[in-house]
Image (cartoon, rainbow, N blue to C red):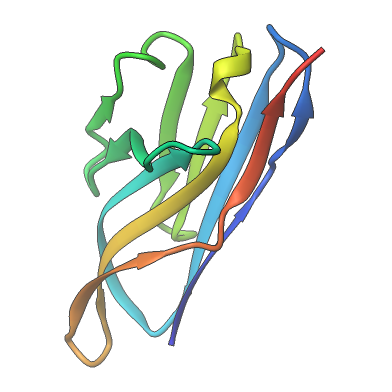
Length: 120
């Protein structure tokens, strides 16, 4: 069994900051790419940022310069530092991971999501 657990969401004022974490646990042999996606009410889920096992990152244009993605491979954990938050960043944020289990099966796993609300 593999679990991805997000944490760090909450309510923040415009211009504020939050740090999201995504911890992967279970029968994990190796993690390849990890990423954050978000889904606002009435909208489709969209990519926020991705990071390879080597630390190369890719960001959506809407968050470039404001969000920073990092990961700690020893802890199987990924972090999303979100600065200068805007009301339009309000969404449920989901992490995912492309990984190989100890049974040598490769698949993409998703967390349960964490709510981020940016409002005054």
